Length: 500
Image (cartoon, rainbow, N blue to C red; front, side, top):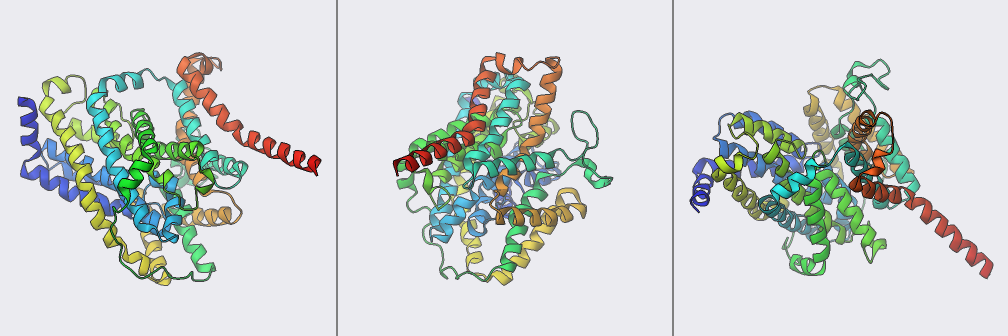
C-alpha cells in the first residue's frame, strides 16, 4: 500500500501532469499528420526527456504514443489517408463510413475502442506480465517466421478485390523490402548503383506515397465529387455503448489478439491491427459488408492496436526486449533515467512501476476528451474544397517524408510510390497489401535466414516445435485459401451449368 501511495504521489507531481498533457496534445497532432508516425512522434520526444524527471520522461513517451496511434484514424476516416501504419488496415472502411454520412460513428468508434483497448492492455501489463514475458522468451526464430508470414497472409483476407491480386501486391511489397544492404548477408540488392538505396526503403515514404500522393493524383484527374454536408460533428460518442453491446465479442477478441501480438518482440500495433481486422472479416456473419462502411472491423482493430501498445511494454520492462519500435525507444529512455529494465525493477523500484501503470490508465482516460477536441478541430477538413486541401496534403507529405531521413531522396520516393499506388489501384491491386509486405518483409527474411543457419539448412525444425507447427498450419491455410475459393467457385459454376 505504501508503494501504491508513493506511485500516486509521483504521478500527481506538477511536472508529470504537465508532461502528460502536453505530450498528449503533441501526440494527437503528430499522429493526425500523414507521414508522421507514432514512432516518429516518440523519437522526436527523446531530446526533450533529457530535461525531465524519470517518471515525467517515461510519461511523455507513453502519452504521446497512445494518442498518436489513435489520431492516425482521423485523416484515414476523413480523407482516406492513414496517419499511422496501424490505421492503414481499416482506412477504407472508415472512409466508406464517412462517405455514407457516418463520420461521427467511425471516429467515435476509433476513439472509444482505442481507449478501451489501451486500458485492457494495461490490465494485461499489470496482471499477466511475468507469464506473457515468459511466453515471448520461449519463442524462437521459427515461430517468429511463421508469425510474420501469417501477418503477410492476412493481406489475402483483408482485400476486397481478388485474393490473387492481393498476394501479387504483397509480393511487390516484399520485393521492395529486399532493396538495400540491410539484410542478413549484408549484400547490396536492387540498388542499381544508387547510393541512397543502400539503406533500403523505409515504410513511411512508401505508406505516404501509395495512400496520400495517389489520392492527390486521383483528385487531379477525376471530377469534383458532390460536397459533403456543411455541418459540424454531432455527438462523437453517440451510439458507442450500443456498438459495445453488439460487438462485445469482437472487442474482446481484438483486445486478446492485441495483447498477445504486442508482447511478441517486433510485432507491435501495425500487425495487431491487420490481424484483428482480417479475423473480424473472416469470422463475421456479414463479411460482404466489409469495405462498404461496416463498423465491425473498426471495433476489433481499434481495440487491438492500442491493447498491443500497452502489452508491448511487458518484455521491455521485464527483460529489456522491445515489443516494437516505440518500446525500443522507451528502453533507451529508461536506461538514461536509471530505470534499468529487469526483474529487479519490480522489487527495488516498485513505486515507479505502479506509477507507470497509473500513467497508462490516465493516458487512455484523457484520450477521450482530448480526442473529441481533436476530432472537432479536424472536422473543418470535410468542408474545405478539394482544390484547397490537396496542395496542403501534398506539402505535409513532402515535409513528413523529408523528416524521416533529412534528405530529399525520401521526397522523391514518396512521389514514385504515389504513381505506383495510383496505377495499382486503377487496376484493382490493393495497395494496403503492398505496404504490409514492405513493413513485414525484413522480419520474415531475417527470421527465415537465422532459422536456416541454426538448423544447418534443414526445414524440419520449422514444423517440429508445437507452437511453430500450429502457426505453420494457420499460415499455409491462409496461403491456400484463395485457391480453395477459386476451386469452389468453379465447382459451383459447373454445377449450375449442368443443372441448366
